[in-house]
Length: 115
Length: 115
Image (tube, rainbow over all chains, first blue to last red; front, side, top):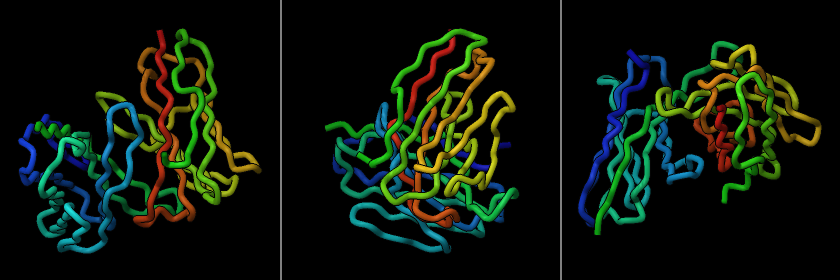
């Protein structure tokens, strides 16, 4: 079992829909939770990060963390065709070899928003 | 544009060969991370350097090595290449070494194909 599980999709939705992307994890030591967006043939870019359980909102994006269930979500409101990308969840804990918090990534969910 | 540059963009080589991938971090960033992204493994952390020193080591093969130079650019050396080394290699940079939820800025990646 991988530490971070994420459905690869693809998830296809019409423009304007509310999108829900999810990840589950097994390592209860994870402390930081992140969502990255990766367009085709580009590097990932950080969308949001959270530390505690609960919700964090940024524009059309809401990140939700439930540490008790080991479950994180990203909601996208009023989805646009420009949101079509792969969304990777990531979570980090202090690395065994030093003081750094290194992210462990999910495999990514491919999202397609069609006009 | 993240401000992180990687060269070359594409690399085609043969099994058994050695290649060097280069990364220049964003101006002011002291920390450099290397990742490998493949279809079957997803995005995997390889190694981190901070201000010239190795900071954290992940799933990096012994055939691979990296270093960070005084001008803060970094190189990832891959030797005795195998077909399975074909992947996207990303470099990311950040200001601080801890990675504690702070933004990592990813470069555009180097696409390596081993024939």
